[in-house]
Picture (cartoon, chains in turn red, blue):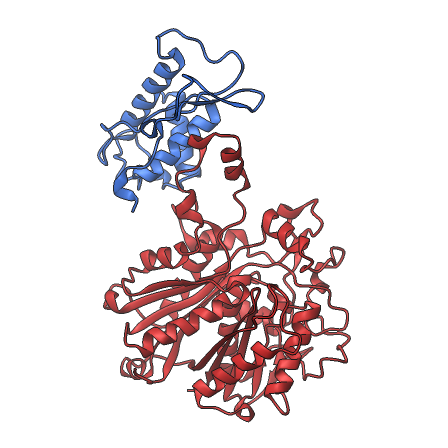
Length: 406
Length: 135
């Protein structure tokens, strides 16, 4: 297998801050939370979320698609288009059979309760004929490949909250194996619908701060009480470094390593000592040929649940003798489930590229049991050579990507 | 000539739900030009049936990519008239307020399901998209 470096040559984002990398990154640097009351959740026990601007998404997507593809697919397509354009690649000119698409999705759309009731009522012919095509997780990669004309290997990685990072790992394997030359890789999800919000609320995972949505997502804070449901997509264009150099592409960073483990501890609670998380980070660093002391920054999974943040902190202390500065993007963007890992991977790449660590919002009273250098208040300028990006999902899935300065 | 109510309704659906460019909406526009295929046609007919409660049993085999919007309107109007007339040409709509979906399964007003003819549902009675768009 080839072990040529994998270059990140394009990035795309659809976040609750904005459709597009520039505006999303700017809001992240300002640590301005996107959480707000959500009209679609009115009257529910948790009635706020981090919502992608509807008009901006519709405008970016263009006509004729919304009737047959759900929101999570729409976001993946828009982010993928931005990433491919950012990479200065043209689908009209590339060898489409050598372009793969891997999109992570935490779950299929949860907002088809009206359609489900038609089945309950026995009104089968009333079902939308497009229901399967618009909602299955694998359709995100399928529709992105259709939109771009990419005809190489396609895949959907689904490891719940780690899905987006897992997509990068799968993409790296495809490139290392020589299965294709370019991979459009990322993650997407849109769980902030009534069914999704009710489901996550019912299992006790969501912040209950309905009176203060903007202040609700508090990763690593002593007063954290759960995550804020969001949505969004992140996409990266990955290609072999030699090919990127040959076409004079801008290389943001290298995807230097990837590690994946399972806790095998509990269906949803993380291992309390961060066992699987630590092993994922060490595996990824080993894959990258790096030592823990080479890492300058950690982009944390940082959901703001009591259990995750504590377990992640313990994992970081197990891996790093002196953990590097940490930030948690979910304090601004909320938790996009399958989209989160990819959104945060883009942010990790941008940190390396700009030499800036975005601050974590709402970090007012540090949890004394965490013991990490959480970047707060304002962006921190730093010479970054290697960044670790973590994602941990229900089911005990742990995924870590390591990015390195090119 | 003024457009019929069904023509206006279709144009509205094509414009607002399917997001077809309004400038393309002409009576003589072929389905292909409007970006409509068998999947989107099946969706359109399902919406009409849901809104009206009048079953539209089949996508006629006579419909092709070159069928125009005006012809689609005519076919739908004919099928609705036939459906409202009933299988014997004069039977009124179900008096219990239920609907008669194309799969032959009638949902009564109290929410219970009953088969119209007491038999089983035939797959051929279901409206599905053309097999060419499914795998």
